[in-house]
Image 1: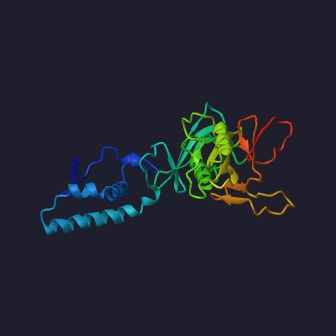
Image 2: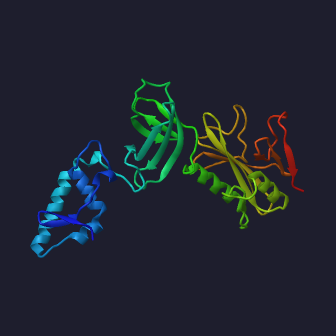
Image 3: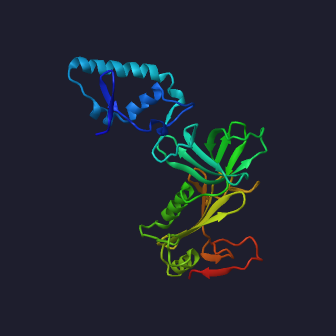
Length: 307
C-alpha cells in the first residue's frame, strides 16, 4: 500500500510528484490538482481510507463534496497529463505539444500527443514559417492540425519529416497491407525491418513469382515528406498508392474530369489507383518501384513485365 497522509482524519494517498501528471497555467499545488489526483487515483485512495463509523463516512463524503465544489472553478486551466507525455509538453487545444529547437535554426523537433490518451499524433522535424505575424522568441502553441502546429502569433510550424513514431508510417503500411490482402491470402511485406533483401528486389521477386506483396518507400525533401507504394493481391491485381502528410486538395488537374478509379483514403492523405494492365513495374534510379509511365524519359529505368 502507498504511504498515506490524513486530511480531517481521512487517509488519502500521498503522491511524491503530483505536478508532473498535470499541465497547469501556473505553479504550485492547488485544489484542482488535488481534485484530479483523487479522481484519477480513486482505487489507491479507497485503499488508504480508514473509516470507523457511519458518522466518519458522512464526514468523508462532505469533505470530498466541498473539495469538488471549490476546485471545479479552477479546473479549466488544469489538464491531466497521460503516461508517457513529458513534463516539458505544453497543452493546447486538446493536445500536448513538445518542441525543441535544432541548433538555433528554423527547424524544431516536435512531438504532438493526444491529450486524453497520450497517443502520438505527429513527430518529426517542423519548419517555422515566419511569413505571418510578428516574430516572438518563445513558441506559444494555439492548435495542431493537418501536419501543422499553429502558434498564437499566427506563425505556423510545418512538418517536414516523420520520425519512426509518427503515425504516417503505420497508416501507409496498413493501407498497403489491406490492398494486398484482397482475396484472403497473406501478402509478403517487402518493407519489414531487418529484411534480407532490399524493398525493390523483394517486390520484383514476389511480382515475378505472382505472389501477393506490398512495398512502400519513405520519400523526403527539404520541405515535405511523402510515401510511395505498390501492392498486389492474390489475383494479380496491383495498385499504386501515394501518401502525403498535407491534405489532398484535388486529385485532378484544372479542366480535367475526375478519374473514377482514383480513390482517397485515410482522411484524404492517401491516394490509391489501380495499375494499368498488363502490369509493368519500373524501377527508378532511387530504387522506387512504380507501375505507371514515368514522367521523364531521360531517367534510366528498368522494366519488369508480369506475363
